[in-house]
Image (cartoon, rainbow, N blue to C red; front, top):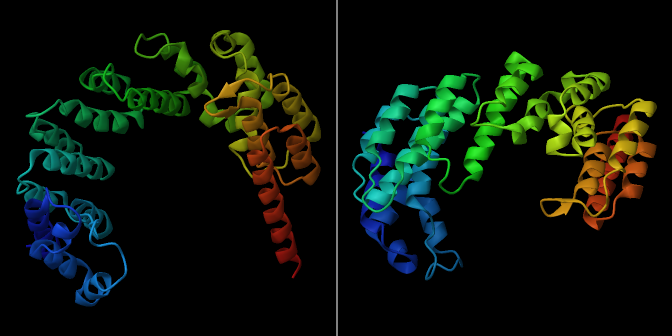
Length: 323
């Protein structure tokens, strides 16, 4: 028996619908905390000035999952206790967490078996299990297994970002193992498409020369068709992937010139695309003049401040090396 998991399992079952003071005073919650952290820590927490009337002083299932990670408890042992969880929704979440752990340990068959045990009494959830598996296969270059898993992951259901991220990671890892041009070829498969073209180079940009990047952009028009600012972005990735790096003056000027072709009003996410690239480039170098050039063209005060911190850290490192 694992004393800590046993105590936490009992606490999870008996306090599922309790909050704040009701949870904090429940004997199973108190017992589990004492078993996991010790009597002294329990007494100190209860005697503290924390708002224990409204807020639970710890999360039992979260504590259970941390124990599994920290102590590297065998999957079979963890599954034994999860099988004892009464509430189906809680059990589902804990099974998905265990599935992540099993996949991190490369226990593929065990992880797959957990999907069938997910209970769909209230809403669909098995596709979330398949998405965990999809994340695992995204780290490989096995196209057949990735596509097979993708079908069961219900790509049309929210959150769709999970699917987009998995596809992007797969393309990136496929490019790393098989080369950029072969990765570009599989974009023709309908499950991907040209919108994932940047993923064929982004993470490997530092392994290519500037000349090689330019040749790929000239050879494959899909990059510029998908994103007219592919060139400055990939040039920045070439250097940023290697930070800290010393950049040849000519290559730096070429990259700055390409970045400044991007209109200052163009946005990516919440910020200006140009600002982000200038910051990424400036934070990659240690040459003060190059950092200042990047900062000079940035509009957002936030990125200017971040580059100031970068300069401060560099000066601190230089001073430390002198002493």
